Every structure is written in structure tokens, then in C-alpha cells.
Image 1 (tube, helix red, strand yellow):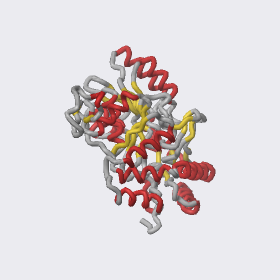
Image 2 (image 1 turned 90 degrees about the horizontal axis):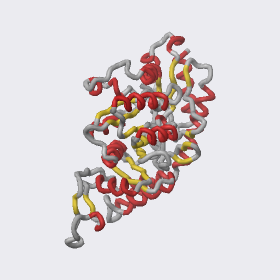
Image 3 (image 1 turned 135 degrees about the vertical axis):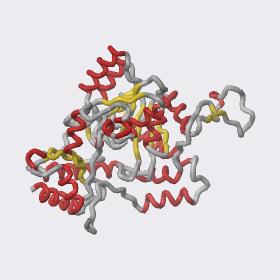
Image 4 (image 1 turned 30 degrees about the horizontal axis):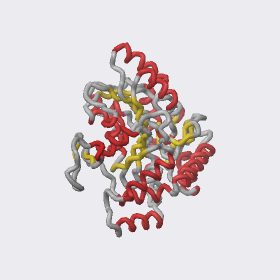
Length: 389
């Protein structure tokens, strides 16, 4: 590996971010303090959602959202096989069963055509899903309006996994606004658009879900008088109303997140600029660049190309390893969830979702992050050209 290694993703931290964290460290509150509410209000104002609930990871956010929707034993959660395992695992955490819907071959998002066909079959078999989790892969929104129409017909809840997509838009509105869904989840992992180190947030416009999320985040406990089953015993009093969790975010993380939100539009603008440069400079190579639906504006968490292996004379692995050896930190998003050993033990197998599997055989994620310079991107392109020659 060369000394000038270019990773596929990387956070951008400024002195303002550091100052925001230091201010919290010097305050009276390190957790459960005012920085949490400020971060939640900032993200809610940006997206247009009524409420945000900050938690310690996007996985926690997805799990808590499923619990708030009442997902449990006997229910089904459906999601995309082209995602990180957490999108499916959260259904199992709730005791539900999990299934997948194959992907669209152009957007790599959940296919609405496959979803419609699978729903019709599931209705006949009386095993309709309670929750569908569309994943906004690489920062591009799914066709969420069509999924919403299907939800109205078949009666399932929509939980948008927008871990890749803060700063993106769909039909001119911010992803996370909740126009077509019950809940939306964002991720703030360091390789995402903004970071809190680790962290996530659930957005919703439904007050009853918001109240439940607030309780679930902290052990199922409330101090709200109107929710208690008997009058308060005193100012110390609280009640545990349900079995909740400890998924709280710290004020340290929230302060970093609020500071990062100041640059969200700047981050996304640069990512879009870098994506456009890739689109332009990769023309003529034996690969397919990402396609964007005209109703979406991606926040470009990832830039994924698909290799034309039939014309290359090299394997997928040979191309990947050659790029890594040259100091280009490519990655692969994702190994189809249903092919993981754990899920194969549940009965899934290769061949179940052919579009996701074909995508996996050809995909490579190229470096894309705010701090990537034009010169570094040009080096990525040059090495890719040499490897594919």
C-alpha cells in the first residue's frame, strides 16, 4: 500500500467543530442536556419534519423505529438486499420475520415493480409485511411516492432508511420531511455526509410515534404527567411504561452534529461536483456510472461503478485488489444481505434476488468525500484507467 493512500470515505472536521465539542466538555452537561435538543431541532428544521430523536447509532434508530411501529412476533419486515445488514437485522431484533425485495438495475434501490408483484402474492398468501424499509442507496431516494401508494393499498408502514441520504431531495423536498413515510432514519457515522462519530436520528411527523420514541430511547421511562398511570409522588418521580432501551446520544456527539449541519449544503455540493467529474472523466471505460432518477437529487454518499467484466479480461477481484495495491481505497457496498451465512441459515440462498446478486458481482465504490481534491480524484481516475486498460 502506498503512503498516499486515498480512502473511499473520510470525515471533515474543522476548528469550529472542535470548539463546539470543547464547549460541551466545559459545560455542566455531557449527556441528556440541551445540546441534544438543539441538534434534533436543527435537523428537523432542515428536513421539514416535525420531530427528530437523536440516538447513539442508525442501527439503534432503525430498531427503535420498528418498536414504535409495533413490529413484533408474527409480523414481517421487508427491505432491500442491497444494504448493510442492520436494515434487516432490526426486524429480527423485534422478533419479526424478514424478507427482501430485489433491486432496480439502474438505481440499485428497492424495485417498486418487484415490490408491487411481491405484495400481490403476499396478499394472496396472507403474509403481507407490517413494515417496509426502503433504503436510499448511495444518497439517492427510492421512488417513495409509489411505495406510499402501495402502502395505502396494502396497509404497511414505511420506514425510510436514509442513512446515506441526509441532504438529498425527492420531488423537490428534503429526504426526511416525511411526506410519504411514517419514519425516516439518518446515520452520522464518520464516512457519511455529516458525522457525530457514531450516531443516528429518527424523524417523524406523527406525535404519538415521537412520544413513544422518546420513551424507548431511555428505558421506556416517562416524566410526562399526562402519560403516567397515577399522580406524581414528587419532583423525583418517573414511571417505566414499557420495556425500553438505552440508546441515548451524548451532548458531545450532538454538539459535533449541530456544528457539522452548518456545512451540510457545502458538503453535498462538493460531493455532487466530484460525482459530475467522475461522470465526465470515466466516459469510454468498460464500466457503468451511476444513473440518477430525474425526480431525485442525491447527496452522493457513495459513487459506485459497475464493471463490464465480459470485455475486461480481468475478474472483479483482480480489479479491486489492483486498485487497493495502488493506494486507491475502493470498497464494495454491499454484499447482498440474503447471502450472509446467518440469513442462509434462515432459508435464503444465492439466486433468490438476481438483480442484487448481479450488481454485487460487478460493483466497486470509488473514493468520494468532501475533502477529496481534484488532484486526488484525477489520480483515482488515472489508476482506474491503467487497471482497466
